[in-house]
Amino acid sequence: MKVNTNYLRRDDLLALYNKPLLELVFEAASVHRQYHNPQEVQMASLLSIKTGGCPEDCGYCPQAARYHTDVNVQKLMNVDTVIEQAKNAKANGSSRLCMGAAWREVRDNKDFDSVVEMVQEVNNLGMEVCCTLGMLNEEQAFRLKKAGLFAYNHNLDSSPEFYGDIISTREYQERLSTIENARKAGITVCSGGIIGMGETVDDRIGLLLSYLQMEKPPESIPINALVAVEGTPLENQKPIEQWEMIRMVAVTRIVFPESVVRLSAGRTKMSMEGQALCFLAGAGSIFTGDKLLTTPNPEYNEDREMFDILGLVPKIAFQDAPQPISEPDEILLKNKEELRLRDAALKLANEEAIASGFEPRKFTSVN
Ligand code: SF4
Image 1: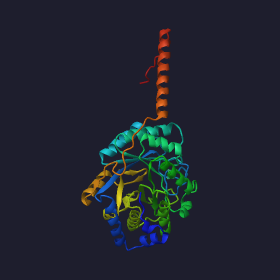
Image 2 (image 1 turned 30 degrees about the vertical axis):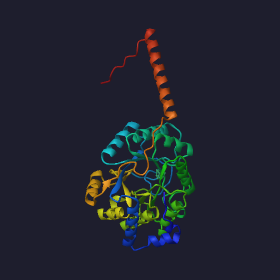
Image 3 (image 1 turned 120 degrees about the vertical axis):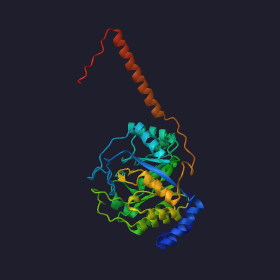
């Protein structure tokens, strides 16, 4: 992943950010055309596979257990439901599925086993699979990679300086370590930020500087506008102007010419014209479907209409990197074998009981 060496210093980045808007969009559009097909925009879907009840305190997030929001806590979705949702997303044009679980970190338990199975199944549908599951250790990252995970999402959210104003339950460094663990496993990285949380322009630049300091910047950089949700500490935050989104997308595009810049949360507040300028400035992906985890998002039909008007086509999967191979997972195989042995033992016990004259208990329906 290349970075633009003209903009490695904070001052140069600030000067770029503050350029007259149309100049900036023009420069971004020129870079975009050099590295990407400007007609293609990837449609991705974001599915909340485990909702709410998160012990973290991210100030923007309605899923944090400590805030009183409308989000209902739901346990992990079952694998079949996820496959059904993935098929539906694919039929509606999505070539990438991001599965989000409101966890502080991944734990080595049955829920994680199920996520591994989801990754295998969705990868085998021919979709790029991304997961956002909180903090991840190296071993877990390797397990997900083996299952066929294409990308791991872990946002830095903002600059290291502003980060502490928004989140206190985990450190910036912990986020960097999770990203590093995904990298070590050979998973592509999706990491970006949120604007409109009360940060300064300097903080937005600080976020980009964090990615510039990485050995390899993220392959995917989502740019989100805060969706201020009632009950969260940021509920009264004034919405940002769409010009700020366009500016942030354009600067990110110029600085990281090869990465996919994703126009993410906050699209419902943007006009089609505003979104069109984001595409011109290098946004190469949107999230489709009426929900972005728990917050509203434009529906598939609205996006298809927008694509028709703007002459955009959905980008197909695995154009930037080959499809991972889903390899058998030892733990899943062991779990299956244990289940098989348990069923066989139960069946045998039942047969022996019947052979020794035991009458199976009869149940009478209450209806
Ligand atoms: S953003 Fe993620 S980690 Fe933070 S509170 Fe929400 S679900 Fe938890």
